Amino acid sequence: MMTQNDLLLAFYGDDFTGSTDALEFLSRAGAKTVLFMEPPRAEQLKRYQGLQAIGVAGKSRSMPAADMEKELRPAFAALRALGAPHVHYKVCSTFDSSPATGSIGKAMDIGAAIFPAPFIPVLGGAPALGRCCVFGHLFARMGIGSNGPIYRLDRHPSMSKHPVTPSDESDLRLHLARQTKKKMGLLDILQIAKPAGEARHALKDIIDSGAEAILFDALYENQMAGIGRLINDYALPGHSLFSVGSSGIEMALGAYWIEQGRLAPPQGWPTPGRAAPLLVVSGSCSPVTTAQIARACAQGFKEIEMNAGSIAANGCPPLMLQAYVTEAAALLKQGTSVIIHTGKGLPHAMAQAATAQVLGTALGLVVKELAKQTAVKRLVIAGGDTSGYAARSLGIEAVEMIAPLSPGAPLCRAYAPGSPVDGIEINLKGGQVGSDDYFGNVLEGK
Image 1 (cartoon, rainbow, N blue to C red):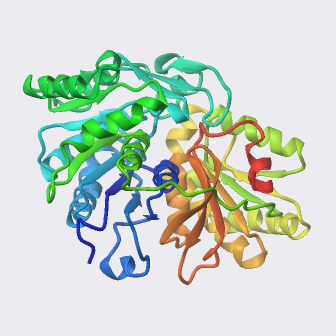
Image 2: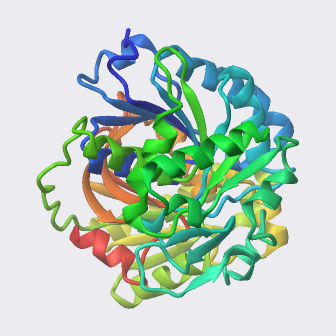
Image 3: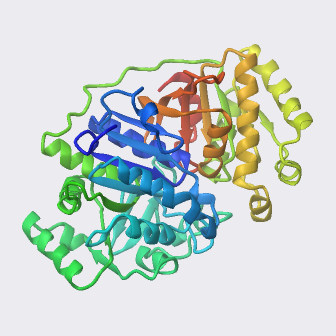
């Protein structure tokens, strides 16, 4: 069994695509990292040598708050048993959540009970992803890995209209105050910019004032190592520090560990190259993904739209799913890349009814059958809420990064013992990730 000397960090991601985001930034920093679908057992860990970080691709973002206790308490306890100095609850970089669905505050309450510490660090910014937190307010670029404009979160064209958890508050302290009663503090951008000793004293003053969770601003990438240092100061041997935030946590700690010489970034990654035909399945409602589907179809991809309403009403109807498999298999065997999706920009009512679990499972079942019938070597799963359920229905045990593609969405190798997707190259994309030509770039391995 691993000891605390082996692992630097363990994280639980609240959805699959967001978890690969954290996987990427740890791997880029030089940490040998594997992302599991469930908290790994001792015999599983033995199959992956030299690990310095592990993640669990969870599904709590789409869960009712009442169900999160049953999911997160045993998961956090399992991560605590690994003895890593840091345990991170990884959330979407736009803090998608509400008091009723995917409550980050609920996760904070559970984590605080399992990981006693002076405070919970909450990191709002991830500058490399176009996420900036200034005086507590979160700003987000339209499309991660694109050149889109940056909006305050409550005015963001996509996130302010999210079908399940629309953003109507950009101040993360107020956003989280709806979900937890913990007293929130803020280490603001001016304090972050101070010399290390002064920033450390400012943080201590906030802790001494009674703050139970402290939000860290972040605007520039060159601030991340300093933030990592401030957070790392409170991680004690044998007492994991529980933190909350986007992959900014991995960016900050990774940058600090590189600065300290504990990690060494890889000197380049292999170029994956073209893998045609490409299979894409999408449960994303984001307008970013909608634009990407349209661009791919203009480039020669063929789209197949699943009847999300019927699937939601009837589970995963075998005859309907088989019809999608038959159509897609014929195209793939001709060398045509295919996008199977549950609807571009689903209306709010349908998105509520067509649950992430049902749609994600349906997409996974279709992919599993296509992997049996065709020679597809590269797969994209788009949609944060649905991706975890799709991966689980595929029998995936874990994934490991093999090459960067777009920030927050690396190309990975899937480990799926006994499944037809074992060894497949897989790319997991959140709804907000990528430029319009995203799917074409994944096809070419760019």
